[in-house]
Image (cartoon, rainbow, N blue to C red):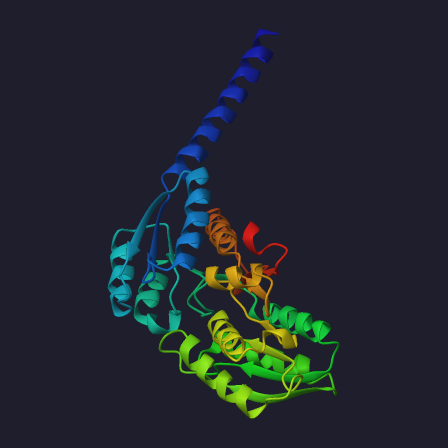
Length: 311
């Protein structure tokens, strides 16, 4: 009996020591997160989600902000490699920092993108699904106008993530024979797109003065939608029922949506969720697991007047 008790006690002790060792090992993990966008709200939300998860895992996280200096990220990546960190997280276009990513790969340090972009040098990239966002918003709009009417699109094909949204919008609207895209506008984005979108929408309204000549405005991001809203209000045509939709659900867009006017809906990326999912991907890698998906998608949220102020 004594031997059984002693053996059982030793087994329990071994299990406890193993658990303590695992916990200690987790606590020793060092992660470097590098961003050029610390002042951006989206980055701050993602960082919040990541750091909350990192704290629960007991990781030591070093956040490096290059304040908009993209080339500096390469040297910061090299610094992280020389410090022999366990993993690196970036939220910048990976094609612009190839040398730094190659240094990390050579050192065997996994790099995870946090809304960064897909690249073969990343273990994975965690982001929203632009295809799904555009499809959801386009479907919302076609439902609102009963599958018919004259539509204005604001697009920006020079930036691939936004280009995707326009392509999906074209595909959805193309399945409705009674929807006609009367104008596909690429605004000047030097101020985000509001001023030039307002100017171009003002000209378009003047060229189409009859009520019903424009049924809806679809914008691949919120600033053109806001510019179009201003133009419609300035022209005194808010009572025509022109439906405006955007994407990204910026605070300004949510305020406009909540007011119950022409700007009706936008898609909100779950940036806190992206940060949390990024931490989950890092944890999987630290535990020796292989991530097969080059991109991990976090669902976006449809924002309307019903939930705009609740988020």
